[in-house]
Structure formats: C-alpha cells, structure tokens
Amino acid sequence: MYIPLPKENPFEFCFLVQNLDFKVMVNKKLFMQYLHRVPYHLVDTIAVTGPMKLSLISFQAPGMQPVECPNSVYPVPFFTNIPNGFYPSKSIMISGTVLPNAKRFHINLRCGIDVAFHLNVGIDENVLVRNTQINSSWGHEERSQPEKMPFLQGQSFTVSILCEDHCFKVVVDGKPLCEYLHRLMNLQAINRLEVAGDVQLTNVET
Ligand code: GAL
Image (cartoon, rainbow, N blue to C red; front, side, top):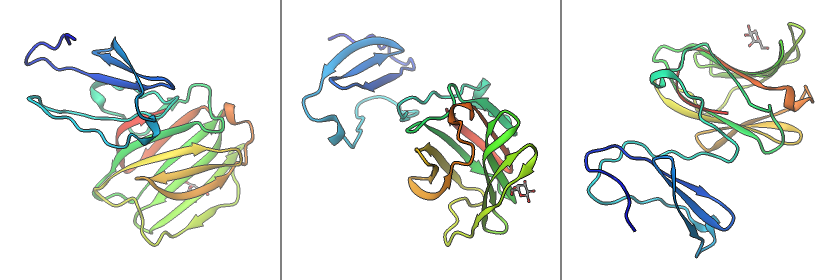
C-alpha cells in the first residue's frame, strides 16, 4: 500500500480507535480502516521505529478536542468554552508548567457568573482549596494539605477533571488528587474553563 509521505516533509498519523477497527488518518485524510485482530483494550504500548524524526505523540480521550492557540502559546489568564458543558463521563485536560517562583494558581469551571468548581493550588503553602462561588459569594471551603504535592515549582503537570454523576474527580499525572461533590447540578451549563495564576499552559483539551 502506498503512503504518500514525501521525504523531509512533516507528517501526521492519527489512529482513531473505533469499536470494530482502527481508522487511520494520514495528514488528516482517511488512509485506511484496519479491523481489530486483538481486543483493542489490550493494546497498551506504542512503538515507532525507522528513519524518521518523531516530534510529538499525543493521546486524546473520547469527546475531547484540543483548544487551538496561535503558536501554541496560551495566554494566562486563560479562558475557553467547554462545548456542551459537562455530563457524566465528560473530562477535560489541562497540561502546563508551574512557574519557577510560583505561589499559586487556580482552575475555575464556570457556570455563567458562578464558579461551579474552583481549585486553588497554593504552591508556597502546600494547600489545595476547592470551593463554589454563587452570586459572588464563596461557599464552604474543602481544604487539604497533600503529603506529596503534585504541583511543584518549575515542573510540568497534566490535570484531568472527570465529571461523574455526583462529583468532579481530579487526577494529576495519572494519580487521583481529590473529588468534589457537585454543588451546581446543572452540569451542562458548566461550560467555561478559566486558568489563572503562576502557571504556563502547554495543552488544553475540552
Ligand atoms: C479565598 C481566595 C479566593 C478563593 C477562595 C476559595 O480566600 O481569595 O481566590 O480561592 O478563597 O474559598
């Protein structure tokens, strides 16, 4: 099978895992569909070999879209819409680097003027604060002081926020960090993400 990849030119392969097959896109055009021969949930490794230079491998969860930014530079404070808001199983992902002298940063999931979920990361005080703001008033704080703070000055991180029936689950670098019971129940109206503070963003998917 001929794959049109001229020498020296950048290329992109995208493998979409479907129920019956892998749909393979080359440079955003459908190239082939490959029927599964082993159950796809057993596939856990990706290997790339041969005479080529690899610049990026990324994984995308179902229903998430990268938020495009000019030159991949995300302004901070950063605001973006979450198309269709939240629903159980919906997750978003935020990757970034904590600034070298960072004191704090926060992530807000907004529902109109209200903040359904606020996660404030106090790097200097080693504290995580979660709260909800309704009509400009904060509710009661949920606070914790993690034994091992996953956000460290100068270090990169990936936060996923997964919406479940009763709560948001926050996972950092693959490890569960905290759960926050929903206080605003109209999940689909929680449709705006905001990140602010001492952080640089490298990738956002909503
Ligand atoms: C305040 C802080 C706000 C917000 C709030 C959460 O002390 O100034 O930014 O984090 O706590 O309860």
